[in-house]
Length: 406
Image: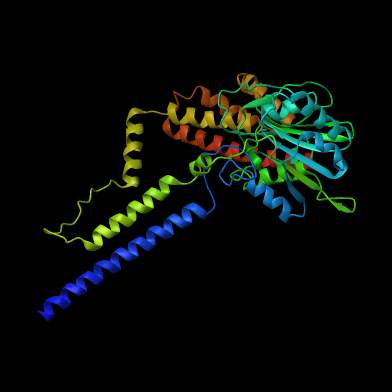
């Protein structure tokens, strides 16, 4: 009886130990999930309180680390009149337009600019709050992401090519509006003086977001837009507006921001480990069936033989020509209407824009346009020549940009 009793007590202690460890793990997981920092990527508001991909919390903290006097602005726009505008930058990241006090807000921002302030606004709502600001739909179909093209040698254009969402474009016309970045024919980064101050507009706050500011060009654009760190003997004050953003106030909104899916997955994993620790295996073990995969090299050789048998040279030639034409548009800045012209006109316009002799490129483009009758070896050399032309264009474009910057 003593042996049996001791065995029963031992099993009971083991069960209690396992259940205690499982409860401890669950409590730790719940604690970290409830009190840890929220990383909710479903929150698309560009606020300094949002640590998700769309938030601007990283930019707010980085500005303070770089020497700016970074603050959250949670007061009414009318109180901007009490600030020293000469050394202050106001950041409006897609603000929510106030319905009842829209005119008063526009007047307060215009007065702030007139006294020497700097305003960085993004999106259609940001343009509405700027003096003489207006936007229009973009000409391109893809509004999710665009690789912009710098225009001129301005301070913002020197940031380089940006990855930016382009929901709208700047539509106000006038000699005072200086376009610094374009997406195709659409103006997406604009600056202009107003009174003693300066207004800067971006199509979207993506370069300022937690996900976008990691790019070197986006960081350069942010720093150039905020202005110098020191204004005279004082640090520049950077106000990240939060007054014109909606805020979470209810407990329901707070709970909605918690990572419930990761939390549920962690609890499920703890449950599986608990079952496995107390379960018993029955039946034989078998090695999993491994499905053999064909070697990638064998696949490439098979495809090569198929192309050779079919004498198919049009597909690779068309792909190489299309890639070259896309680089002429996006990397060299030639318009799509010009790219529909004969190769001689393309070569002439290219020489005027970036310099150099591109006669060979024109010959390659002409040959690739009617390459269906070429032999495979000749088609391969033509594809290689088009790739070499792209590399030469990239070197020439880089040299032209450096010359313009100097």
